[in-house]
Length: 298
Image (tube, rainbow, N blue to C red):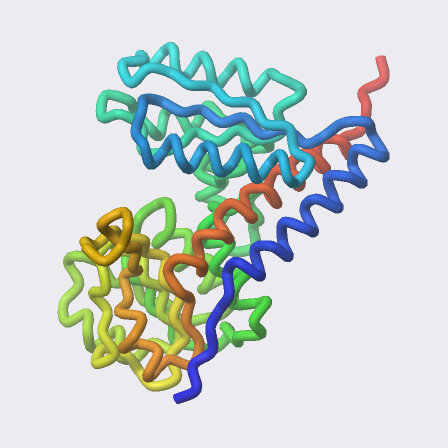
């Protein structure tokens, strides 16, 4: 089968260019630049890398960025107070709390402190609830699932009426992904650790979204010919031939899957670039909405 590559780098670049234009237009009209604040707790290397990437992306897009770094031992009260401080800062249009947080922190309580209009990660419980409720629109949608939808739509892949299977049910990817697909009239099945006979369900998928964190678990024998594959997974596997001693792979065995798929995202270079591009898009959207608010007259 002639499998087409879903190029997240190229589509992400398109989104970033659109964001940069919108940010420039906003500055020209108002003299203000969109602003994104990140909150990093602890010294996890992966989280530090992600935050640096986000700040660099902001700079290229004409978005101001503000970084807050807190000790891994920060108290619940101190962390919530820092988020509340950013919530009151007029320069900040979006607040991103880098996850995961340390085990002693109540993550949901922290995320609930982010105002809806600054919740550019889309994790506030109210935004998640609005996403789940038919006929309602959240202020923002979580970046990775929304990036997946952008990939599908910009490649002209039909969603309505298709059978979609989502592997994984996390609040960050699986749950919102299922809701977004359902909103676009797909028939959605969520496969998770307690699902009976998951291979049979996967075999029925016209669209398969893999977000389970298990390297190359999905093989071509599990797939329906012509399936569209969105691979959210990013896993390190040992590879002595590489300079770093490892390589990155997805949750899908790319080499075998592309023999039966009609479309597939690579890892890296598929979903990953879309997450940051979508974060920038949400931040500009937040800034535009802020500047559009009527000024109160006393």
